[in-house]
Image (cartoon, rainbow, N blue to C red; front, top):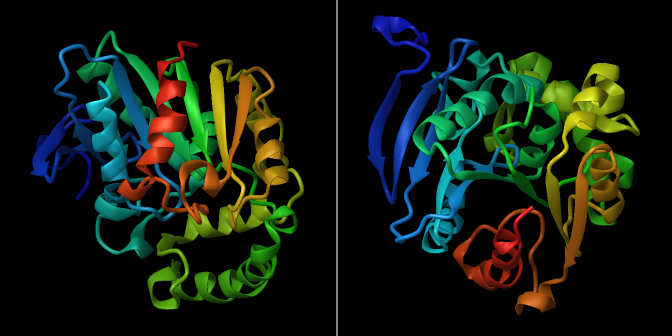
Length: 304
């Protein structure tokens, strides 16, 4: 369905009740919808609103446990799916024309605008997981965000990946993606049991960046460097010692590109939160509540 079909304007939102939150579909200038879910805090004094920006291929509903915990802490929470993912798929993913940069240029701004309209006057905190943290340096501006928490965020440069992932990354970028995506018109992650089905533009752009030492900034050039440079808000970077995707070098290289921001890095080991494993995906599940209580809560209570 086109974004303006039946007179639906770019500001119009289709709402429906979804589990603990309210689903809204936001129309972008590019002509597609972005689905968000709003979780309202019922506390007497709401402290702010947290936007949870997903990792690549991780549907927003998987962050529900964490979003609900945020509401108990006194924050409204908003999750969303990028175009071609989860509730933001319109038809088959093969029809999706988005790439990572268009997620940042089209999808993130409408989410920020919706949050500003619905929660005017409240502090806006961006919690970016993996590529969700990259969005800070790729979106047109971050003026609506007061501070950010990045979780398991680093460059995708494959030769700096954690040792357990290097072989898989090499196979993915030099064989699997170039063999399947041009042929099928999308990445068939569901059939391959690798990530999930992803748009062609996303995978090909991601591949190109992962084959460069400087990742996306080297791949795109000066204009993207300037966007990263322009980010001036406080960033709290959470890295996990057993992250199979991101080495600490990956993490540091990505955050070094935020030259105008104040970056504070925290490295968490599983034993610190009574767990045997954290990894790249899963910290947002209910069983990691000790992580939320001992790491996220103090950061959220810190102003600026």
